[in-house]
Amino acid sequence: MDQHVSIFLASIGVLALVGIVGLGLIYLLKIRRKRKNESLTSAPVMNLPQASPRLEKVQLHPALQSQDSNEAFISECLTCSLIQMGSSVSYGDNTCPQCGANTTIR
Image 1: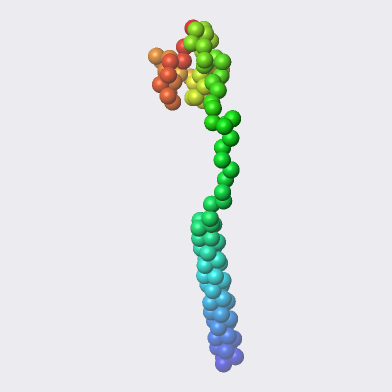
Image 2 (image 1 turned 90 degrees about the horizontal axis):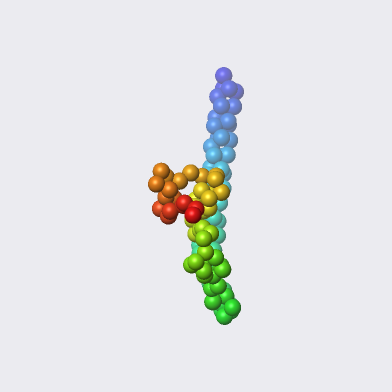
């Protein structure tokens, strides 16, 4: 009987030791992750090169420049483009559910 009690107590001790070591590892990993996140967020911003003058000027698509065109050209709303391709459906009054634009092709 004494042998069973000592085996039981030894098992409890080993389990407690494993639990303490596991909790210590979890704590150390959390500290490491916190330091890593802090170092990433507090890292100095590198000096980025200035934007070239070529990128500062925006050139419009030719269909956007000419207002006389009979073609419907929708450049912003993806849903409008899907409606034109037939992959999506507009509301009953031919407006886009996303942006409200008229989707009829004249």
